[in-house]
Amino acid sequence: MKRPVIRMLAAAVLASAVAVTISPLAGAHHSVAGQFDIARTVTLSGTVSEVHWVNPHIYIEFAVKTPQDQAATWRLEGVPVGMARKAGLSLAMLKGHGETVTIVAHPARDGTAHLGYIIKITYPDGKVFQFSADPAGEKAAG
Amino acid sequence: MTTRSPNRFVAVSAVAAACVITGLSLAAAPAMAADSSTAGSAANSGKAARLPDGHVDFNGTWENGSGYDFIKPQKGDDGSICISGCKSATGGPPAPRVRVEPDRPKYKPEFQGKVDDLSKRQVETDPVLRCKAPGLPRIGPPDKIVQQANQVVFLYDDVSGSFWRIVPTDGRKHRADADPSYLGDAVGHWEGNTLVVETTNFNDDTWLTDNGAFHSDELRVVERFTRNGDTMEWQATVYDPSVLAEPWKVRPRKATLTHTELQEPVPCVEQDLKHVVDGTHHDNPR
Image (cartoon, rainbow over all chains, first blue to last red; front, side):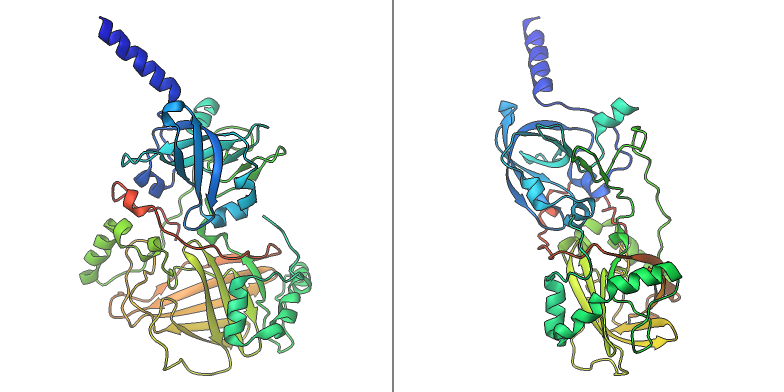
């Protein structure tokens, strides 16, 4: 009985460290689904170290501090620059000022570590930049 | 996004490049500076503004959605921005995305298999996913137009790059010295209030749409631009008799005059395709 308990504890710790939510994303961009696991999310906390303001997708280098087992520089993909600009989001806004932010992202499907697609970025003051449908938000709202 | 008055000309590199190449020089500035006045009067009258030469004035920056019709950005009072998947106005779940029936050319039966195969393998075969120019008519209406008496310049701020086309309207014929290219060789003329642009001499590295709609080197595209107030309608007809069963009249698209100026183009750096796990079709909106 001891090992199953340990396994359960390990699973619980993992689940709390990497919040995984299963939720269908009916309206998701198909190319995102081809590259990222839209049925799973990972919640990361850290600082934006670099923004690659390029097409066809913006990329952020994100220095993750917690959860500790995910600590690394993640590469996180976002929307095309044109979409960001049309929404009023600039390079400077994404770069921020070194503040610690929380990013919820879809992990890569091909198993590449520390690669994801941004769902939303939450700042210390409560401000949110949302890039794609938030499964948790949909669930809560529904 | 920074909103600027069209009167305040901001150096957009694509504009600058086009000006240098076409020799527009600063003579183009007055034409662009006329945007604000013509936009306002045209909007109120419902009529199309005109240049001194009598032709309809298409100068200006035109918001056409860039094919992102499903993007409904929202801004919050606290500085929050939602680009996609936003909650409804009442705070409920995002409204389901409305899918418009695709607009597709009709191929001769012997070529439909090739279209289907390219479409099935779109992630590995679509030139646009590799930052190549989309070609015509896939690129859609231009994002900015600079118009003179003898030529019109189209500027595009596209997800796969920023592009320009120079369209002589002085009666000259197609160039004989240009290599086949992604956006072809264009000449224009006026039919009353309609600007008609005929383009030929395309390379074979573009598709007509995102579903593997290849074309031959006989491709000819005729675009028609009309203006009503601050709205421009773009319509294209595709002729490629060696592969298409009939000319394809593309569903018209509308664009509205905007005071939000284009910004400097950004590089297109493809870095995703090696991570795509399956052939999931890229849901490109065009």
